[in-house]
Length: 172
Image (cartoon, rainbow, N blue to C red; front, side, top):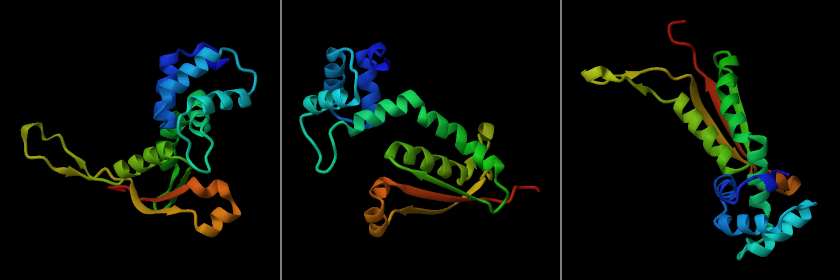
């Protein structure tokens, strides 16, 4: 239903942005030309036909399905809402552990932790700028699944775990 309603250009942008798919325009055109689809297998076949190059061990429709899922479920929006709330709930020295499964999620998490663990620049208002300590987090680690983990659980192949620790509140 969503595929019928979305404009071709919007679909192409979603596939490109959320699926990081270089052939997004070609795929979006093929999907829109196909019209009503009844199964995911039909969608996968359309994408497979429209996709000129395939990666080894990865179905050509994987990125397109990811993009559509992210757009419909608003997954990245949820992450942007969740992260600040999670930090607010942590006590000092509490740990924030977040697992991401693709680069878009990981980038958001990385940027959030970076922002929350870096000194801010005071605007200065024409005066010499000073660093203002607004940090709430300290970066602890970034971990990828080991070879053994991936063998036991192939879905962990793309997983990243990022950990940060809540700092003591200033002036408390």
